Length: 203
Image (cartoon, one colour):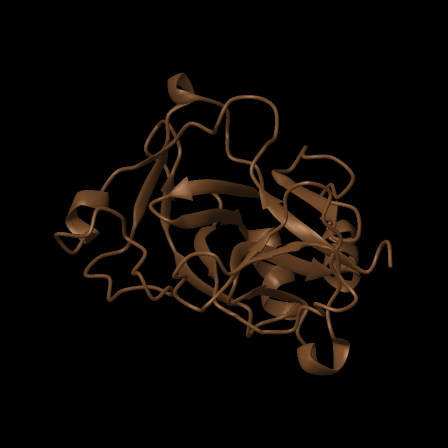
């Protein structure tokens, strides 16, 4: 059904990435891993607060949601508040020390990742290619390319509003989360604030 579930795409579809630099990433990494996010998701133990600095020469100021921060999203305080209220079980956060170009402390920002994984896709009611031809970690892979249309079992989702499945890295959300973001002043009909909602029934 159109308008029930959405793919939550992060970052601007058009335009440059933001000009935020992860200043102390090297001190936070756990070699030999090359990104901060652990293979199992969530956050590792951080021996200091992540420090991110906005450098205008690198690009524009961050929108409410920016991807590409060593495996994490960078989210604004207002988006963090929406996430924490609508579905607190869906996300893990680490507040960062966000600095403006002059070195002064900027508005609150958080590294964020979706940790809620639910096997709730209704395979019978959906239209997609389920790939079992390779040795996938969980036995299969949901291929959402080529005009897929997916829906989910509400009784399995329960109170969840933002989630991923074991068979794809795609992040999904429902209309309630989209509406909450819009109520907070975040654009949901364009990527103006760094989020794009693609109807899961018409991918």
